[in-house]
Image (cartoon, rainbow, N blue to C red; front, side, top):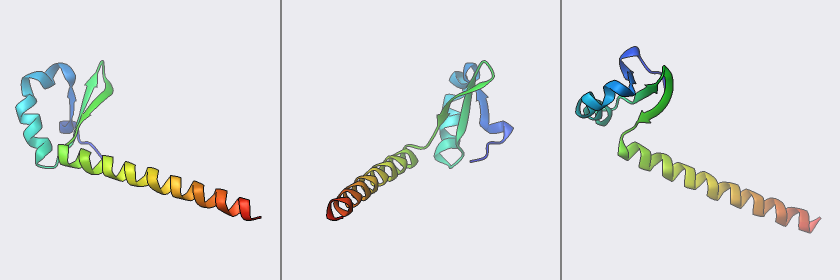
Length: 77
C-alpha cells in the first residue's frame, strides 16, 4: 500500500485528530503514525483487519495441510 504525505501523521498529532483519522480510515484510507520520524503503527479499518486475520488463518491451515501431505508422501517412499 502506498501512503501519501497526508496519510503519514506524527503520533503526537494523532491524538488531537483521532476522530478525523478514524473517519478517513473507515472510508478506506489507511494512516501511518510515526514516532520520532519513523513508522510506528498503522490505523486500519476493523473490517479489513478481520479480513487480514482470516487470510492469515487460512494460510496457516494451508501450510499445515502441505506439511502433512509432504510427511505422508515421504512415508510412502
